[in-house]
Amino acid sequence: MSGTHERARDAGPDAPEAGVTGIDALLERVRAGYERVGPRAAHDAARAGEVLLVDIRYEALRARDGLIPGALVVERNELEWRLDPRGSHRLPEATSHDLRVVVVCNEGYASSLAAESLHRLGLRRATDLIGGFQAWRAAGLPVLSASA
Image (tube, rainbow, N blue to C red; front, side, top):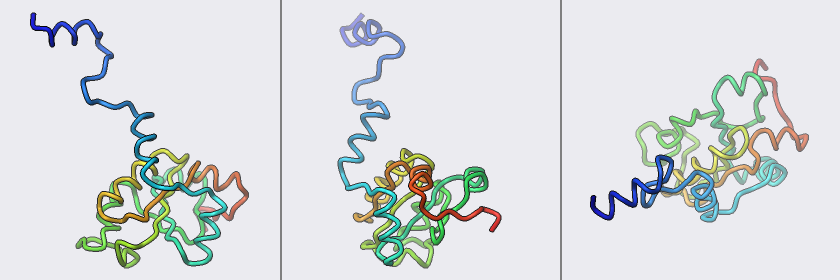
C-alpha cells in the first residue's frame, strides 16, 4: 500500500480527511470574523432602528416559543436570497450591503453560520445573537405569542 493509504487506514474510520474541520472549530473560526451581540444590545439597537433583527428559526419553534416583536422572519433556507440587496428575490428591507443585520436562531449556533454566509454576500455588518432566541427570552426581553 502507498503511504497515503496506510495513514488513512491507520487513522481509523472516524478520523477526519485532510482539511476537514469539526463544527466547534468551524464556529470558532466563523465567529472570529465579526463581533457578536448579546440580547440587550440587540434589543436596544433594534429599538433605535440601527439593526434589522432576522429570525431564522423554523416555524415549529416560532409556534412553540413565540416571536421577537419587529423581527423579520426569514426561513434559513431562504436567507441569502431574501437579504442579497442585488438579488431578484430580495425583501424590501434588503436595501444595501451596509445593512446591519442581527441573525437570530434558537440558541445561537445556526445563526453564526448564517451570518458568515451573509458576509460572503457582501453584508459585512451582519452578525448574530449570542445565545439566540432562548437568551433573548431568558433576558426578559419582549416576546409575542406566535398566534398574536
